[in-house]
Length: 568
Ligand SMILES: [Mn+2]
Image 1 (cartoon, helix red, strand yellow):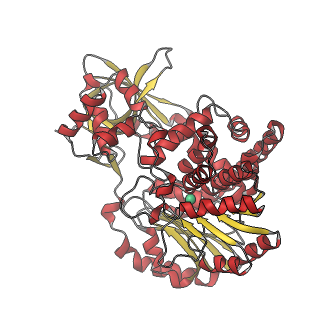
Image 2: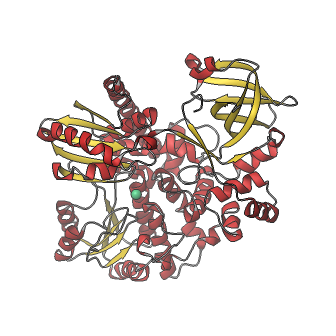
Image 3: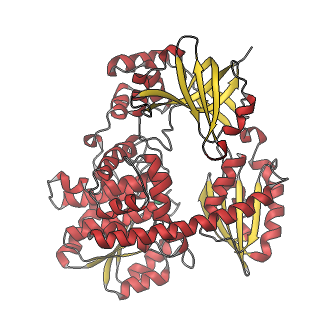
């Protein structure tokens, strides 16, 4: 066990392939091994990973039914029909909605949108909303980031004289809805680089197909939507590999060129300095774009993305920032209550916490924090009069959806996947749910899976810790789901000095040496292990190699992930 009580695992070395890729692309074997660890098996795949190019995106018509869907949109244009885009309230859903609304309006189609309320309506299509959309004169509904499970609502839409095109990225149910066309990359047979697209990625492919079908040859027009696709893709935590990597790289470049007024204003309101990275999207932009949907209505975030006037966009961004601060305040209150109710139960395999009045829009975020802190699945339940809403988050290797599914007869609404799930039920069932979960937990969660792991990409000699390697690592950005920051490991480095830095000495700064050279190291949030580190003793270090320029020069810096006593 390491000083952070984690077990270390190392990816299996693939020397031959690593050498081949390293030689071909003129990179170090270490970087080459990291790429292999991200699932790269051939030179072609390596080429696309190292050099993600838009030209490598696959034809949108490779997704089934795309031709039919695009044709219907053009028919709507020719007939002068009104179209409504039906979206979702999270960042993926809002960016997907913006992509389709903007693209259809550019084609001269009268396009409106509908985003359901997170509470009261909930995710997906709803009968009442469908009626309202019909009353407004819409003849064609295009869903984004939802729709694949809305067979009933789609039937209702056709009975009201509307066609529905479903564009979605969620798993295919046993029975497909009887829509005019269903566009979902999960319907592609066999492996395909489009299979992991987010809702915004599917929306991007869809408008690309529509433009192609309309005979638009200027590719610059379609590239305009990549910034939105990148936002949705990063926020939806789909793997940042294959086509998601290509779109995100291009989209983040566009974000950093500050082209879209709304995003530019939000970057300003969030106080982001320097360029926007995937990390800043995840921790600064996405939470802001999500907050109106959590506390009020996601329409505000959509308005921001559609706004072309800088002054108005600035006002909306300021409002969103304010809602986000409220969301943070509510979150930290719930967080404190939740933490105090965990105390004494930290070693339970599953943490189930409930309280009256916990805001349903924020419990998911707090569940993630609790889950991360204790490295075990957490379920937070807010009680509101006679109803409960719960939100669950899990850790690697634990299927919290499966666990909750074993109690699904108690729920009035339930959905999610292995890592995250949500439900609604009558408050009178709360105690029964807790009992049932405590009985079921053993068959779904094993204690071995709850040991935190540090995954080492590659071990290297201290002489290989160089600026050039740090620069190579930076080229593997954007990091996130499916492409985590590379973790390297070096054995037996000696600690020359240690220092706690930051508020309450939360961070740990070390000077290390291999006897020849000096290395600067920083461990964010691990200041409390300082006492376990005696100066002049040697340890094994797991770290990410970053380029630091604090001294005015670019230098390699070790961002510490974990520290282990040297094996004897
Ligand atoms: Mn989505």
